[in-house]
Image (cartoon, rainbow, N blue to C red; front, side, top):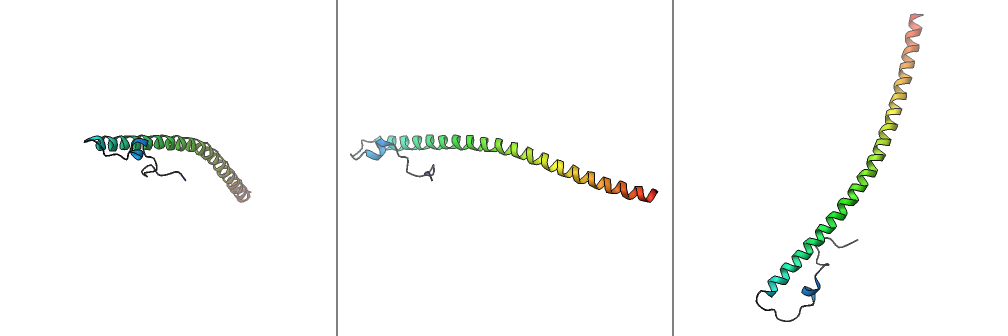
Length: 95
């Protein structure tokens, strides 16, 4: 399973490899760069998820429409059988 978007698994190389004392402001710059790169990765994951969800919903929509048609046919068959029974019953009463 891939790392979550909020994990530290995706760290920029400059932040991860920096071992020397930093000049004033450089630490803040690296931290900000790290956060920007992490947010970009989150947006990329969100886009990927949205594309997958859209594809899945489109496939399910087609299957749902087919299931709705199957259900409609079943209900029409039941209604037809019921109408036929009623016709036979009323036909017997009239005769």
